[in-house]
Length: 196
Image (cartoon, rainbow, N blue to C red; front, side, top):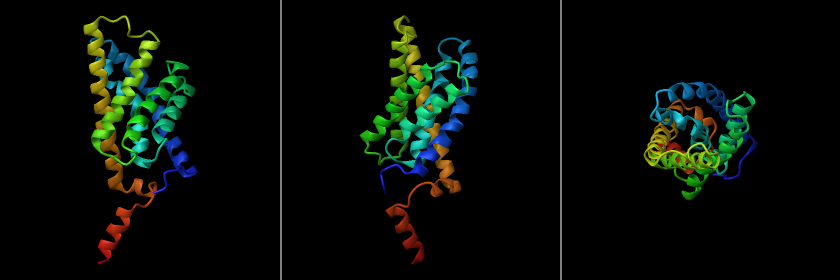
């Protein structure tokens, strides 16, 4: 399988990112609404903002895709008038890098659920570091900060990890992703086995 990105890979990633940029824009008001419940319940749905990276990578399975998808989705959300303004671009970059680093640790060869969940954690950690940089969370009491971090990590694992993984698995079953992914040795082997 070629590891270099083709124009088709980039265009498909941009389409995925565009879809997620619309979702991200719509997710903002929901996130704000849930925030009024208190106790960082909103952090349980924060993981939606990392999902473009894991979904795009699980579909295309090449280096650079997670970063490109997350950055492009953040750009789209910004262009649609996302409520966090220009900081969205920095969040997209750092969150995409968080995912990309995890996939790189596995040499872009593992598409398992636990790797996707680790990528979700990588994105969440990146977002938390930016929250400290922007001064959003550094003044919280320790118990409150702990609650926020745990809720964000749990939400990220559930949405960006588990939900994204099973969403792509469902797409795989429809055959949609076969048109996108290059043929692998396993595909040739299955074809050969069927012909016997």
